[in-house]
Length: 131
Image (cartoon, rainbow, N blue to C red; front, side):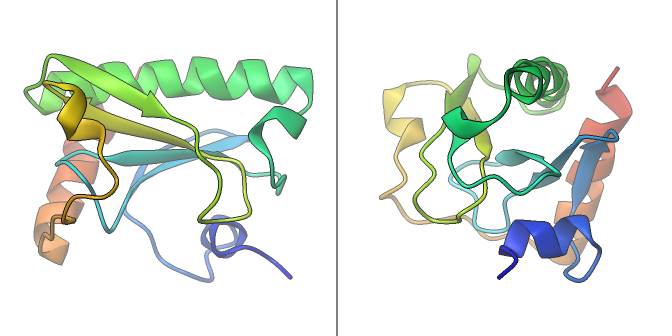
């Protein structure tokens, strides 16, 4: 059965797309722990991050770097925190989260909510900065 992320890749479920290549997709998390919280996924459905083929593993990190740099230009923060947890969706993915301290990376805190317009505007602003 296809993961929710595979359905997003196929266009069956909408997303707030930040950036895309032939192999990767970056989109805003719709239940973010911080403004700008972005998910980076390979388009190929692989459950466990470290089961990605070497070329995809290297590629996703280089793609995530470009996206992280763009997020940092748009969302004021000290750093972009990176988390690879992989338990909530059976599709390899990286969380890019604007942070100012360790507490900002907590997935146990209350999630933020934004209007569709706010999500769209943020995704567009970040996407325009991706090189």
